[in-house]
Picture 1 (tube, rainbow, N blue to C red):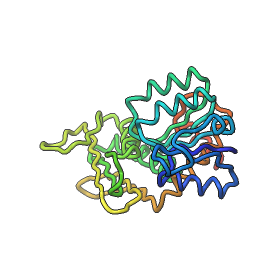
Picture 2: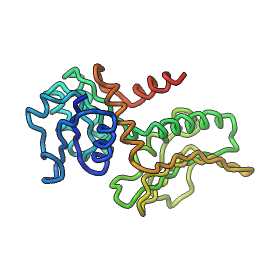
Picture 3: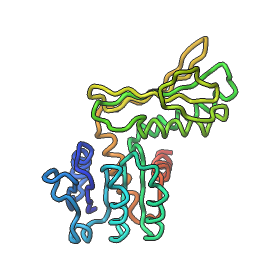
Picture 4: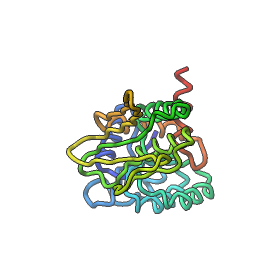
Length: 251
């Protein structure tokens, strides 16, 4: 397939490597910083040749890029985080254009196994009130958002499965946490690609479910697999749509 890389930072470089490994053609590498990619904006020729775009850019670029994909009728796979406030606008752009737009906070296949395990564990302790649950994540010192999109996705899955937890708390606490609050803590430092841990704790014992990313390659591979899958689809899609099909193939 012919792929337009939107955002040529660290993830863009990893995506390029995986695309080449899998025999795909790269139309262009686009980055808003001059000199980093092939261009700062895609040309008409780039858009005409593109079968799918893979985007890991900045939150401020998501809406303008969605308009580009809509105009050119290009499906897109988007791993940019931090644009939740713009979701309704992007969804409207996508639906009006009739294209496919698949977004995720994390494309790592292992991370989605982690989400499923965390959700199932949360469901199981609903009838075990002696167990509390919390979540923490660690990332490198260059990450610009906290908590990570992955942590918030895991927290949402836990809330869905565990009715006694009603809301997510991410800020510094100067009080006791309430029983219906799920605390999500973040640490930044070093070069850690990403560690996410769900901790189930009681007076008797502690259970930890952890996903540790060793490199960005797992995220890049998942994004490329999603791009291969999304061609021919339509709608404002969540990664669950892709993951469901992927996991079903293994049964």
